[in-house]
Amino acid sequence: MDKRLIEFTEPYKANGQAYETGDRKSFPKAQADRYIDMGIAKDPETGEQGDRKPGVHAVKPENVAIKSG
Image 1 (cartoon, rainbow, N blue to C red):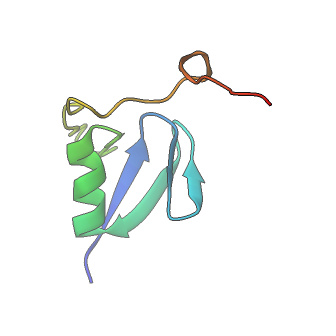
Image 2 (cartoon, one colour):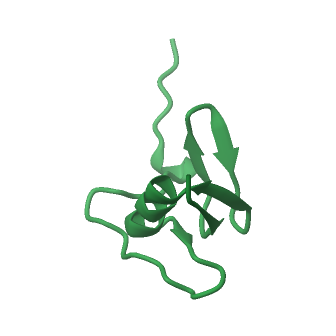
């Protein structure tokens, strides 16, 4: 199985794992390619990074409404 090293360019949570900006990790190539294509990670050697897709946004605390009671 081919693996690819990526570096996260923003915080991301998936499958019970949390990654912070700057975290580097090797994933199976298909999964790493998907993260790069989504624009949330880059290849630290080549700098390859996809564009953020419409409808995919980082969630910021000020954008979240909290309902109480």
